[in-house]
Length: 321
Image 1 (spheres, rainbow, N blue to C red):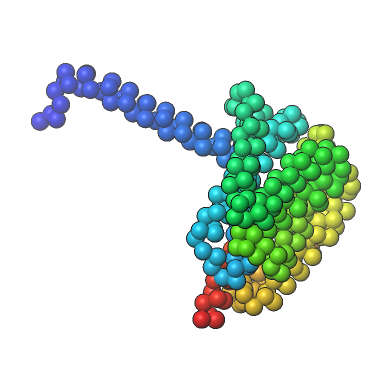
Image 2: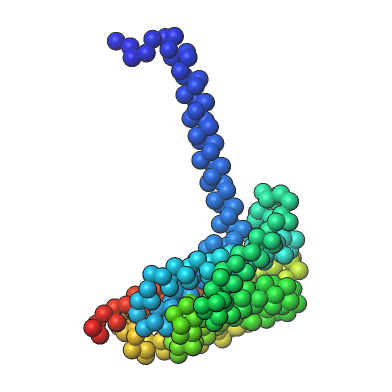
């Protein structure tokens, strides 16, 4: 026995197909919009910066900093970092068009038409949270604005197109993220937070130099001076080690803090050994494959280290109860 009469099929099938098509188009539209926002605001990098800020908050608090503090860090820090990233992409849209790695960014390939609104939104995302927290936490406002100024003004506009060591100073933007987190707890100059800020400063250059080694030919064709392009790959690998070694040392020194403990030390030892070995391999054979492995190892190192700080801080404080 048929569920639908033939004439019902003729009437309902086109309507059902049209509804399904519209629903599919809406889902595809939302996915595309979300993808554009992830790329435009560099939300993957923003996530790492927020993890750095969270770790700064955990260290400064000596344990759980509180839900309110973490929400403040993620909202204010996320908005300021996303705004800075959007301005960075707007400023670099012409140089991005010269490299295959960045040629598909939405401000380059035309996915976002008439992008004059981007810097306006970027500035608003920086200023609104910074000014809102000013009356109650001027130190946090200072580091929010300092991080944006370093990344946009000093790194993107001034140093990046002019010097091989651009990213060395640009790494201070990551340090400002850590101190934003510690400032949110009211203890911005906690010794552990200052050491973590130094680690972020040292980590940033070898992270980007590994990427530049991987895309060395593309950077050579662009107008952005990057150290691995202007020296031999092996010398560039030694420059990477010049920053990898003190970063690893700083990460291990954090284990001396009584607020972290063994829960931090064990993953820190593992990820430090992996990172150092990847750099040794890069020196022995500075090939694109080893540059990629070093770049990925630098990401894993930072994420594991920051996560271990957060978890270690909480567990160590619980053991002291």
